[in-house]
Image (tube, rainbow, N blue to C red; front, side):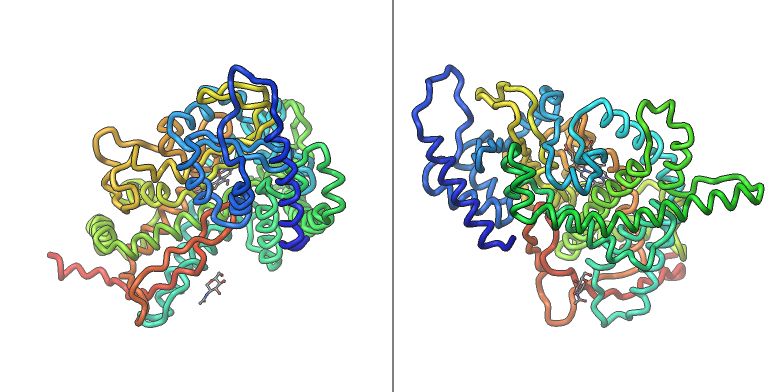
Length: 510
Ligand code: HEM
Ligand SMILES: *[C@@H]1O[C@H](CO)[C@@H](O)[C@H](O)[C@H]1NC(C)=O
């Protein structure tokens, strides 16, 4: 469905919902949250759908307050924009708010909502999530992928060196390449020739998972509207594309195992698919059948949850470093002092060092540019009270983590890139305890892959900062920071920088 038609339908729906809103209802003791209700609301929601959602919602919150309700079609969308209410949603009332809406995309592309991201709360979701945390995203497993991260970062370091100091490097492409190739190799052992097709399909899945698509706004009519709007057809096509690739991958890994067994060799779990195939052998103990579709759904989650998020976090960190020479210098000093004279730095070196400033830089980049600014949409289970208002069951809940982590009530000079803020008194962290800083969410739905994502980000920044001095290309005097439209915050235009190799020279420092 093209945008014009989509908007026309949306506007018609809005008009209807606003009329309903204006109908006098029985007076209740507790009111529903405030929100844009009058005619300009059409403009606002129009904004919500077509612009930088996190920014439009912050503007609306400035008018309506830290809790507001937008009606999009029959769907109440509750938006929370304060530390206190984020804590309420993600912690105090987490059991009631940790559900996910059954979006059309999760039904068709998420193997009937059997992946982790799209699955509504259930015993199954708890089990598959736990399984992934223990088997696939555990510190031990992440460590076992160390050589992959090292090789992928090294590969790019060499490419940057080869480009020479005067050819602008496409930093954006480079960091997304690192994260997608790393996820790909750790998921199934290789970067396949059809990787681009696969990645593109995943991107389209994410694009259709905002929950703002017409069929998703009408849960009861979801299937019908999905058909008539053409969205189902589109989703089935995307699903066919990546499913056939996943079928291939699983068959390949199965035959590799069979060959090893036949040759009397031990079967080694080298990647996520291998791990899942081993678990599949004795799935009696899991409490749910671990089918091939479950394996596919888990791999899909790794890509959907892990590629764009890690890529954009590193991309923004590089952008902020490029426009804050003081910070870049301080970071490079720390790294170059520590690894002085070394030709290559491994993750083991990194673990044995104490690069405090690097960690602060990462936090500050993620604070200003959380990859999922509104987290992932949740759905309430029962009617409840939130911030003094009634929130009906089955409401869509969005926490504007982006706005909260730039709120002057909690942050001094919030728009400034100042990593030192994270080592000052009362400094906060992102482990889901400080609700002014929840780039990975919190509670039952908190991102299970953040250590995985941060490991890649850390090694990438470390190497890029150690090996090169970065500057803007000739004729460019400002780092463009424009954000692309969509639910994630990505750069609109690629970050292009020139890199001069830094040659560690022991004589110079002695
Ligand atoms: C810097 C990188 C990352 C960021 C900023 C990020 C952020 C998030 C956020 C905000 C959520 C939603 C939390 C909520 O609903 O409260 C989430 C969920 C999730 N993330 Fe991440 N993530 C990152 C990396 C990764 C990686 C590398 C993986 C896997 C390899 C991953 C897998 C997942 C999964 C499976 C979920 C769904 C959890 C559930 O619904 O139970 N993420 N992530
Ligand atoms: C940089 O990389 C991005 C992402 O691959 C690509 O879309 C863009 O065209 C590239 N830009 C330049 C100038 O190389």
